[in-house]
Length: 313
Length: 313
Image (cartoon, rainbow over all chains, first blue to last red; front, side, top):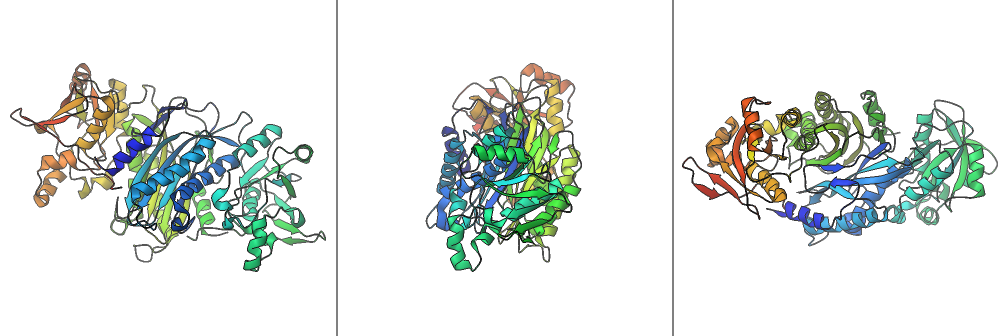
């Protein structure tokens, strides 16, 4: 038998039993105990040259990022990760000199496995291929709702306060590879208050908040001076010619969470924040189709474009 | 907002409500009612130049094949499909002249959607990307066990009879694009008898039966004259210089099912076959590590290599 099956045998040796898993790697499909609460499912495909540069970061970081981006989607629902499946299209001509597809696969697995272990997440399936083209990593994460239920994008209401879980902007300088998906933060928030709507910031704060506004059929105003700006946004600003605030509003891949709660719940969060970098940054307003405004330090409002990263199609 | 979000909006319009789905396309993750029985999960990534030639077959057939290959894995567990997620890496420079990524995406969706409708399967999530590289389609299908339970690769026992659901070989001449995944056949078989072990024939009969033997820790003998040979295997034989039987034993992508049952259950199936092309082709033997034998018309046995298609890594 060939390389693909040797690799699967190697993977199986590295994969311990898990109480959620009846049959894991090595059959036609994984067999799992169904979760007792709502089942979540998300998938993200990351590609060399688009989501990372393999030759610069190596397989371990590429694998880690691919899983982390998927886990961020589970966090955005306030979900608990349940199982992961990993599909690879490995380059036969690897941009890392001398690295064979099998070695690259092992590096990617290492990056995935370390992060999966942090979140007690079993690897239950996948598909390993090679081709004469760049690396693509496609991951599917299954999750389950916590005892407090899941959070969608569609529950924001006029008067809600808008929060983010951390400083924003300039992720491209490194955070996009090193971020920790906000699973624990989302669960801690959801245990404390009723999250009305939530989204992870993958496309950019303005763009992702706008997704919430579209689904919730309301508008919002952000207070510019209250938006927490990452140090990386200031660094990037010095070369980009754009302000640090613009980077915080529009840069993608911060993978923080943006969410809305009632004013009473907002006060509860401010009195005893369950995550240290939580910041209130604006409020929801009545009005659909949605409008998004940015308020400056003089309480002047201007329309804010929801521009962010999007795949041209 | 750009092309990616327009496309997601278009997909959502085409996607009807489904009783299994609480939140479908358009949030960070899908939210599903958990299935009442064991949850199945499988993923397969298909790539232009490896699994199909996009310029020859077009997006509709590429999408159909990608879903069909995944459904075949659910069939191999005797499972019922439950939900599907679709990730695309679309070429910005499409090998079909003049076809933009958005148009290609719509073609792929059409192929996926038609087959999904045949199996009453909701499309609940995905990720749509574009890049300067060939098309990759990564699909994850969730399933559930039927009331009769799932079937693994590991339950074959010495004395079991080995069956296939249809004629084999020469799939590359067309069946690999047009096959119907054997979901209904698997369920009909599982309702009638106790399937001990099952696998779909994606790598080739000998290779896939060998997977069953490895997991079940037994050996087997196939009777050459009893193996049903597809007309395409005879056609292909005329140009390949290999016998029709060799094609039936080793060609990949027939996507028929190979399974084992007790002799008593075998008789039950032969007396009143639940699928028309069912054929008994051999028996399981004691002996591990597994050996696979081929018996000719004179009852002479020779070792049969489990060679089949494998991705070089």
